[in-house]
Image (tube, rainbow, N blue to C red):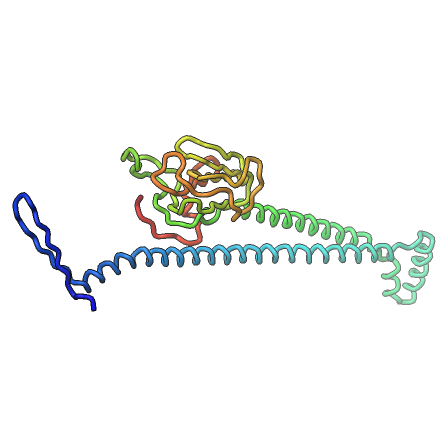
Length: 298
């Protein structure tokens, strides 16, 4: 059986001073267990946070897909109805055409019928549907034009949604926020147009929106840097990568791996430097995430 206490003796040879230390096993084991439990608890919290973020992203994408599908279904249905109405109007117009000589004969008989009090037959014979058909054609043309505009708007909206940076590019914790901060190297207050995501070396880094790789090269303090143009004036940048998984000119989609986390350039450890630019102005990427994470200072 293990002893409940252990004693340690420390002797100073020069002075002859002897010190005795006694350690209780249970409190010591409790302290060690607490220290070991902290990183385990942190890992579990990180896992739960990541799972919640993924679930939010999946729900958001599912909602967008459902909404866009509803728009597309409604557009197709209206287009089919307009086409059917156009066919019906054209058919009625063709059936309403009567040869000129036959029309004259109908009108003469209508005059004779009118003398005998047959007003309904006279109305049918003399009535011309040309004006009515013209109005119907104009109305259908307007509806078709508006439907085309609506369809174009849906397509544009889909493209804008795909080009909108959403969520974070890597799994990890935000250790440095957007805005003014104390520079970790100089200690001076400076503007940080990005967030830093602390993550394991070699962790996959994904693009946060559809776009085209416009730069993938070494860039001074940013180390290995990827820049993506998403259209609509939107650009994202991913720095300190250990290596690239894409090249300039590649077309990428949201969630696609573009590189791997590292510590290239001026970095205190493995992390991803992430920037979002809109119309040449940097904005806070955390405003575009599904889950706001609790962060700590670097």
